Amino acid sequence: MSTTAETTPAAYVASATASGREGRAVSTDGKLDVNLAPPTELGGSGQGTNPEQLFAAGYAACFASALGVVARRSGVKDFDASVTADVSLHTTEAGGFSLSVVLEVELPDGFDEEQGRTLVETAHQVCPYSNATRGNIPVELSIA
Image (tube, rainbow, N blue to C red; front, side, top):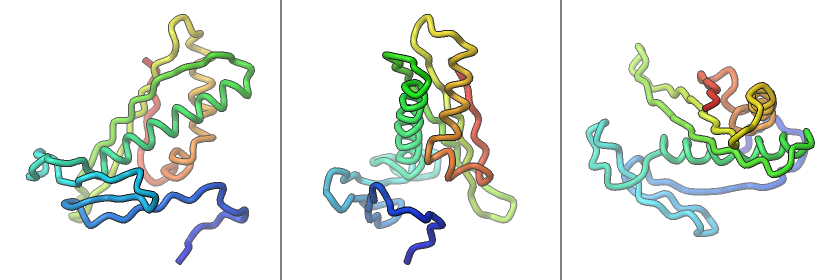
């Protein structure tokens, strides 16, 4: 069942199956195969990764890639920024859970901060993770 509002064919489809917060997550091509376990902070064993870590890694990688695309489109050569995504899990008053994200971008040494801010803000409009989360969860951009 597809719920996407896209009108163009997908350029790529990733597929993985998980068996809950304790178990395994495996991609259909077998390139991702990880043990899952709740973190000790949530009463788990911490003996595996968790959805928040996977989301953080995916968002950081995707945002770094979007930064590279935006830099190339702007004529910036050899742009190699690092992105750290801090994904926080919160409890809601209704007993559910929500997420928030802080993206910390480390610009290359000597890179102009104002130009960097423009690239980061533009990447936030290009990145699929940013587009998916916009209006759904708080995402803060920070430049180191």
